[in-house]
Image 1 (cartoon, rainbow, N blue to C red):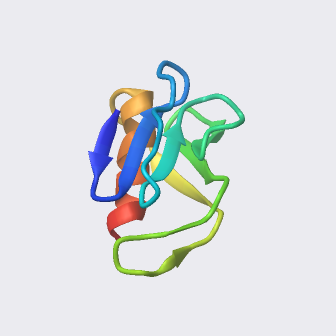
Image 2 (image 1 turned 120 degrees about the vertical axis):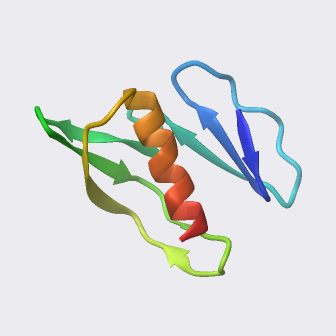
Image 3 (image 1 turned 45 degrees about the vertical axis):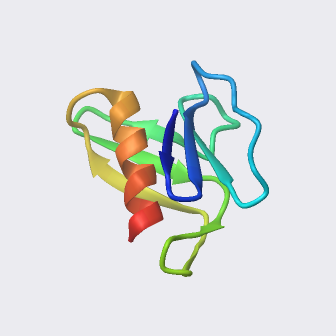
Length: 90
């Protein structure tokens, strides 16, 4: 679990979501279909990451559900987490 401001990021494959305070927002990441941030496809060099539910980021911008093509580098779970963090702070 990682907390960034009012966002609580949880590995949906390996962690149970915590009880949230009223002002907190949960973002799950993982390969399961219920995660907020998950893979929609994985190729040899690139992966397509799917944001399945929108949210309001730090700057107050609405982040809509979308698919993002990213190069595969390092651990796949870290790739999902880093994408979630990028969306939160963009």
